[in-house]
Amino acid sequence: MRKEAVVSKDLKRVHLVQAALLLSFFLLLLLPVLAGYSDYILQVFTHALLLATLALAWNILGSSGAISLGHAAFFGVGAYGSALLSHDLGFSPWFTIPLGGFLATTVALIVGFLCLRLRGAYFALATLAFVEIPKVITDNWDGLTRGSLGLVGLPGLPTLRLGSYSLDISGSPVGSYYFVLCYALVLVLVVTLIFRSNLGLALQAIREEEIAAQAVGIQVQRYRILSLLVSGFFTGIGGALYAHLIRYVEPGLVYGLHFSAIPMIFAICGGRFTILGPALAALILYPLDQFIFHPLVPAGHEFLYGVIIILTILFMPSGFWGHLRKEQLVSIKTGSIE
Amino acid sequence: MSLLRLEALSKKFGDHWALRDIEFSINPGEIVGLMGPNGAGKTTMFNLISGRHRPSSGKVLFADKDITHYKPHEILRLGISRTFQSSRPFAKMSTLENVVAGRIFSKDFHLFTRPSDIETAEQLLELVGIAHKAQMPAGELTLSEQRRLDLARALATQPRLLLLDEVAAGFSPLAVKQAVDLVLRVRERGVTLFIIDHFLTLSLRVSDRLLALDRGEKVAEGSPREVMRNREVIRAYLGMRRKEE
Image 1 (cartoon, chains in turn yellow, green):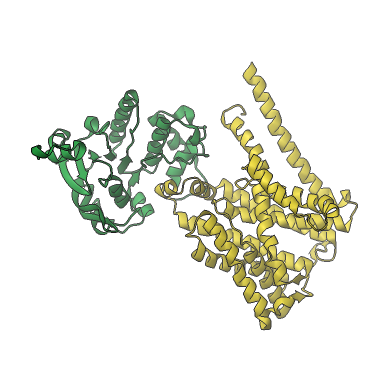
Image 2 (image 1 turned 45 degrees about the vertical axis):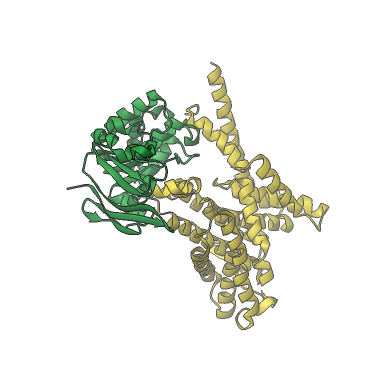
């Protein structure tokens, strides 16, 4: 009898979490209405969604156990690649954004060959240093990139038309918001596919026990490179989207520490080895930062992220979503939930 | 035809010969014990056979195929699997997932786990006697359960030759007895076994033959009875007084 009571309590919790998740999803869908079409609120959430996609992309590599401090390299290359191709050669952003992604993948391949023999902190430091390479090139190749001045007046994303319905992506904050929301959902799907498939199993095996992973036939280096390439690709896409959304790129901005650190912070805080954790953390923390901490302490609002990361590592090393999921998982696996 | 043959196999770390000119072979269906004091080169031999390390010279032949320079996953695919001196479970995966992982990556890769993979894994857990712990995170198993899991995971890769490194070290007498039964059952499945067994807890009871190493060199091979009487082996294990030498 007692066991059944425990079971129903666990079940209730799982349902509660699922309900909360569903509710948040509908809130996101209805956000423009709920926010009274406020440009400011929509812009904050659009950026939060973009950061969510970066955190999701970061976590694809993160799930192999590697910690990258250099994802701004992929973000920046994606942003500049798409910016230059569309601005100078006049290609449509629909075409140049994926190209930006592939350019970032190429850079990821170089990072992979140079750094993936390293482990742990050494890999992290190498990636941190690596960001400087594309940044310095972009900064100094004036003829191609206009150097540190950056590029202004990039083409925005064209209006999408479907019959009589049209979505003005670049012209209206609502359009931008829904477009980035769609992209974020696509990325959630991609990450789910990776994590739930045997690719995810291989990455988990590698991060938990590399030598044993090799002994069961997992080609460790191959999977680590693959996860880096996919992670770099989607980070590059994120950078390219960003460039066309704000219609401006500059080396200090797109190669900044911000775009290396923030996705990592969200991923660790939400839960590195979970599907949704990184995205949820972005959607909670960034608006919290912008709406509450920024007005309070304009100069030092980013201290929030420092505090959050310390608290997470001390009290919930698997991240808040990882923590919740773990408790669910245990109750499911012990057979109490069927 | 021998299943595994080592020809003048040597491994040098710096100036130190970890293994030197080892000639040895194992026949299909045999259980062979590998004994020797600490530092004799037992684990090094496993690392060379499984492709984790490259030999300095000499050859490893598996079913008459020269696999000396094959990569670990290629060797695994051909049918040599191994366990480690200390258990290396994927601690946060369930016990069942551990075995499924052994199944999936060793042969043809499928993007999604098939029901048959799970069935096979369950049967293997049954075989090693930890089916009731299938859903438990592997990190929470006891030491001897982790040893059983190592075995199940290695068997999941469908080996023809299984290299077991100290599978019964630190076991209670009862657990040793169970391990003996288990090893015999594994042989019944058609798997040839090569077992590192420092303290001979297992080898003396199950091995058809023993290979004894000392300081990287072969000192004896033969039936357990012969090897245990060998003067070199006794000296390597127990030492001898000067006048006896």
